[in-house]
Length: 270
Length: 327
Image (cartoon, rainbow over all chains, first blue to last red; front, side, top):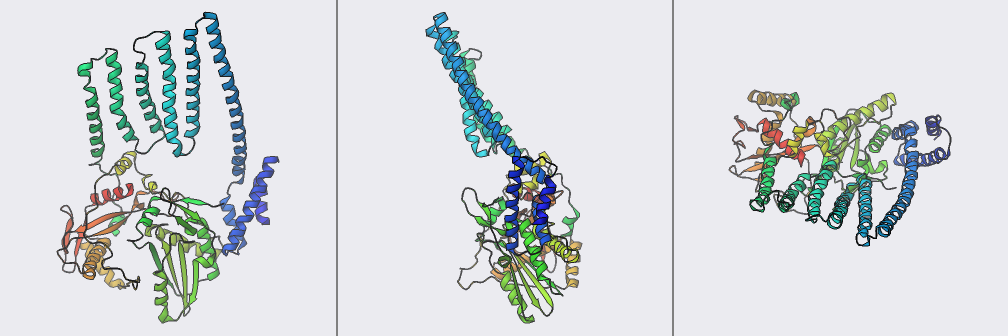
């Protein structure tokens, strides 16, 4: 054990003594002692071998310490970020309320000022959803379904203010088209997300999105009279043909692929 | 704290096939001296410490199986015995035909039999941990570590440790080759009406090892003959295996039989330095329509007066290999 203690001290002697270093050394000594006991219990009595096994498992103690200290720093930063989020959210809601009240009282526009309140809430939901997606994306892949749901929610949370402004403030025709565009945006955003996350079988999701996205596309542009309703409906069966064509291409593209490896001497030997 | 290890694809596949395949890999060595048992114990424990899967038990969680690393002692792994010359084979075969339960504490066992100043070393290992290919490399490293420890007192810790995932076989592929390999849908599994067991099971059934020693001279003759006809050792072995199976199982000459030939996928790895000991084997189904005929229209078939050698084209082998790797 003396040699192991010397190894730990020599590895860390360049670092300034602080509470983190003390706690780390204490934890490491306990772990190494238990490990040495385990190895001895298995049947090894050669101290040099025990020393080599343990030092091989801890080749860079300084790096381990920096990671250990980094964990504390990360937790501290997370606490600070959480406090900032709480305060920021409170400040945001207060600002939205003040703007709502000012607009309502100053312009006597009570009939329309509620739009600012709803928009403020909706944008907050969108922001928090995206924030949560960003946090979950760093974690295990089992959180992906939650992330994708929150992404969809954030798209519609952005779409709601646009709809309310179009419908109640601008009095634009067909304001509901905003939600049709939001559906297309939702598929696009999800498609980009699953590509970035390298989801297995992402191709199946891309193919599944083509027909409904094309349908929404048809409704959007036909309502705005950019394309005619008839024969514009052909886009919908065309989307299914596109899906079939992509599937057939993927099935056959590598059928006649020639691999680049060469026969080796080992092949001919055996 | 309980330590867990990922169960890789072929770890799970060998577990699934446990009722059909022999899940144990065997090795036997004869030395004309007595091994240093204390040194051997140290070398074995060091190997186990570097490869924690060897002292883990498999947990058959249906959603996500895993290995649980166990505490163990050298007595769980090594058996040392002395025997008379005429009993050595019996003791060795008894050990080699033993079982290693997947949920057991250790996945590799050693037996040392001292006899008349010589040593027979027998090793059995769970195929779920590594296949024959990596077992060969492991044994090479094991022997080198033993020699370095005994001769130079170097701690016997020189083993490969790294990724055991089956996907590492793709890491040196070009992107295009990788996509092609992962997109292969060619069905190479051919239906065969024969399946094990070939006769009803009995409580008296016991595994046995059939040994045949071919003199070196004869082996070289067989090899040379094969080379002259364009057949490799594996082709010759496969042909012999077909003939033996037909004879032992009583299949009619006109019956079609398929045998799985193992392919070592390590040929696709440029360097194995960051790869752990694992399973990197694919299977190629070799099916013959009847005894004495080749399997496929595009195969070369070579007849000799002694045996028929059947050989698939190299491109079929490549596509079979990568198809199995993709699985």
